[in-house]
Image (spheres, rainbow, N blue to C red):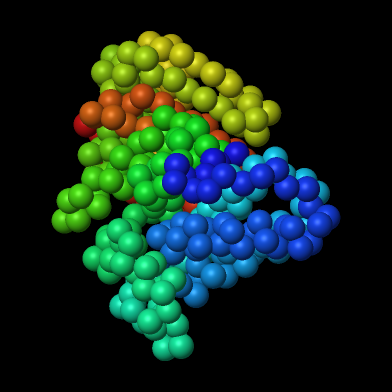
Length: 304
């Protein structure tokens, strides 16, 4: 469960059933939740929609130990769904930031603070260039001090992969003109080629000595390993096995997918650090395989 930001007000344990108490507790969290949603979505209207959806879900929940953490998790997941839907529609991006606030809201203290507090139009434009999972990882960790373990549970990735997503987002925000991920694509493509060709030594050279493979529950049911540890063991695992795998983007980051009968069965999410692969996640959960998250790349990796 996602914790509150370090400067958020601690919430008492809340038992759903007392509507007045619940509404009061929710209102105490509203400004922070709107701030989280606004930084992810760049739109005051959409941020309010995400917060309202969290309120509706709260009313249908029986009991919560940490209200602030639970609400942050829900708002983050709602925002992530909205970002993925937005990406699948290939939206043009953020309009002028001030246009996201209606004329009646102009000058409202909450919205004035929202627009001025550590995020301006320039940053919102940069955030729009990030893949949804990158944006969420960066915003929650760097702006709201949410631990990577907690963010990982929201985006369905491992803590190591989540840390790398946040790092990519951070680099893009700090250096907006820098294209991130191109080097990672080259590493992943080279790995797939070496796997297809049975080039064990090349596979080994592309892996960190402590590299791991992790399979989610759905992938394990399809026959993959739940955990493979060590660069040599990972190289042996993939040696000659990627013949039916296609390059893909998973949440906008370089990866691969196993496609059978024109249906994506498993995706391979790579975490690359300093030119070497430190983790490969084999994911078959239906929520990960949705077209909003997986985009097949229409080319084969070049043989290096």
